[in-house]
Amino acid sequence: MGAFLDKPKVEKQNEGGKGNHLEYAVSSMQGWRVDMEDSHTAKLQLPKLPGWSFFAVFDGHAGSKIAEYSSQHLLDVIMEHEEIKKIENGAEENEKLIEAAVKQSFLELDKKMRTISDARNGFDRSGSTSVCVLISPKRYYFINCGDSRGLLCRNSAVQFATADHKPSNPQERDRIQKAGGSVMIQRVNGSLAVSRALGDYEYKNVEDKGPTEQLVSPEPDITAIDRSTKEDEFLVLACDGIFDVSSNEELVQYISSRLAITDDLTSICNDVVDMSLNKGSRDNMTLVLLGLPAIPKPNEQAQEQEMKLEEQLRGMMKEACEDPKTSRGEPLDFSYALQAIMSQEEKIVGLPPGGGIYAKRTFLEKVYKEFCPEDESMSGNDESEISNKIDQNSSVPMESESGV
Image (cartoon, rainbow, N blue to C red):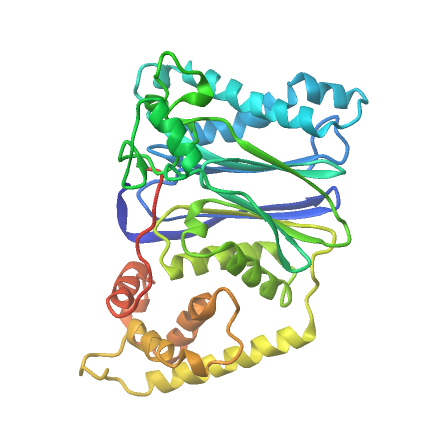
């Protein structure tokens, strides 16, 4: 089920760039997990394919080796496929043939990784979900294997989102049972929370079944969507550490609200990761945000509203900090001050849609330190103690479902 730290590691790893009429940013955080098992790939321009790009998020479980290897080699396997070579040599893009090439590449990579010594000898039992997007001048090819998720925002709404591969899904359950397995507590054989993944070779040993008929299948679902340069705003790839605490619609609403305030995609990615931690995500978190040609621009009205919101929150924090004792007669701390503000959330004007008060917690921490610099509990920014205190008095979900 996964082990947790006493306090989360909140340092973020960032990456970003521009090209091919795209801009991207990546934010990764280890969070509460003992190890960081996420990996990603970001290629703005593919060799010999003008106008093509590739991005992917790999969410490892039971170790990071499969996720790391996949992030380093999946694109290479795809690029070596005959159908891709034909396009490099001037052939017309064929949607169905590309989909077949990508599916075959997943199977080839999974087979190749099985021959790596650690996996062959049983020393490495790790696996990884994968969500990717292969972008051509004409289309987005969404590629999904597991429960990481990709989505497209068009005209300020969710135009498309991948579907999670869960053991409880009828099609997945049927394959698992035909391979001699069972689905218990919504997990493969009561253990694995995803029904498709790279690696996880202990679930791929049924001798009379092909690679896509095993308890866990490495076959991705692929959806091709025609591009619309005048309507496509942004694209998101993220692991379940993000989607455990936000729906597709909530995430799009929140990102859209931040784009009205800033054009700094890295800042927005970091805000999403922080918000997810504040909402109660206990998993590693990785988010890729791709700005598309019709991405909204910041506007003064939204920026002014954000300033007014922060002025109101500052006033509420000041009021909460004026009484050095809580209602229970204990010394004031940040968790109590935050609870006092959260109890009045209906009075707060302009909280970010999809994020609510959790989206402003980092700002509130900063303001609290200004008003209560003598509070030594904030000197080390002990996120775990604060979060645990808040969890005792609120309905914030503090557990998330992981791969194992």
